Each structure stands twice: as structure tokens, then as C-alpha cells.
Image (cartoon, rainbow, N blue to C red; front, top):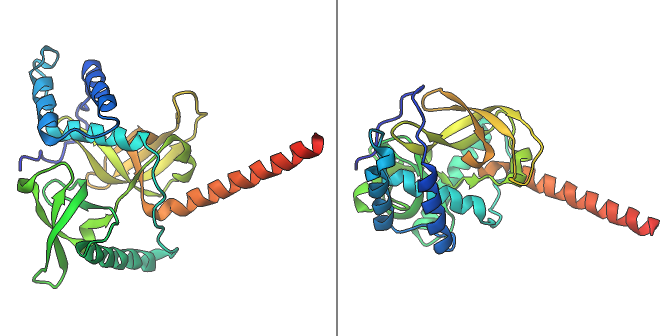
Length: 271
């Protein structure tokens, strides 16, 4: 499969050059905010790696290119509201969520429409699911699914345990959603390392709220990655919320609508 090993902590982070970003942004506009096919992504990775600007540096992997496009795609589009899990607490919430996911996966195998992400057993990162191709019961009686990852081919398919490694897809955060991200939250976070740039589970340790400007959200969040216990300060655009926090956005939107209605009443009275 060729997926790189888990990155070591403390190493220099991978970054695309300004020229590489400019070329990918141009292609993104040309594709109307779409994601290129696998052959074009591989071509970009090969060309970036062979460029003079990367002489003596770590090469660019196709997965890094693909995730750049995916990150930009979801950060720029308006997302449809997703089905919210009923509120619960503690272990009951986790058990309910696991049970709901297993039922939803079974429905998806029968033609359901919910979107999922799965955790690869080979590198511990989370990827969007393109399709569940088959299913079986493991020797311990757990439901497993044969997963085709979005943006990858058949050679990257894996058997994945549904209970622990499949869940409803996380939501990439947009600049208006920073108020819904709180310390203690479980999130999916984009970690850029020396040899890879992938999405891993993390939790928020602290949030530094800042005034937004024309560029959008300027807040910063201290996160701890669950797979290696490393900590990093990241912007909102690298984070994805879990669907369980959707209720906070509903509360914020309701409060905003109520305030707007009050202001409209005040304005009418003054007029």
C-alpha cells in the first residue's frame, strides 16, 4: 500500500511551497472546487517532488496532495445540515453512538445515504469512505466491513472493525463555527509531519479566541493528538468537528436569530 509510518514528534513539518499551492489553487478553480482524479493527483505529486525547489528535501506524496484538495473543498463549500445524534451522556452516549453507527453501516450496505469515515489499520489515520464493498463477522463476532477509501484504489482496501473504526463523517470547520469548539472536545485534526500529512483523532486542550478579520477566523486551538500524545497549536481550518456537537450550532443559530428579531423590533419602534 505504501502508506508512511506514523510521524515522529518534534520533526520539521511538511509544507507545500508557494508555487505548489498556487498551482493547486488554480486547478481547484478550474475544476469548480472539485477534487482531481487519482492519476492527476499522482502527476502533481511526481512533478512537485522532481522540481528544483525540492532538491534535497522530502518528496511530496499523492495522499498529501489529495488531502490538500479535500481540505480546501470542504472548507469552501456550504455543507448541508447533518442528522444529529440524540443527546446522551457518558458511556451511554458512546454505546448509543456505536450502536447507531453499526445500524447505519448495515443500512448503507443496503443502499443507505449516510456518509462515513474509517480508521485505517495500517497508519491509524481517518479517511472518508467511498463504499462498503462487503461485510463479515470476525472470529470474536464483531462486524467488519471491506472498505474502499475515497480517492484510493482497490489495492488500498481494508477490512475495518465497525464498532471501533467506522463512524459518521466529521465536519470540516468553517470560520463561523469556532464558538462551537470547546476545550475537552474530541475532534479530527490535520497533522502535518515530515513524511506525511493526515487526519488523526485529537482533543482540544485550550482555545484562544481572537477577533475575526477579512481572512476569516483568527482563533487558535491547543490540541493533543491521541495517537502520539503530541501537542500543537492549530487554526480552525485544520480541525473537523464531530457530529455530536451539531446541537451547539443549532443553539448559536437560534440565539442569533432571536437577537436579530429583537433588533428588528427595536428599529421599527425607533422608526
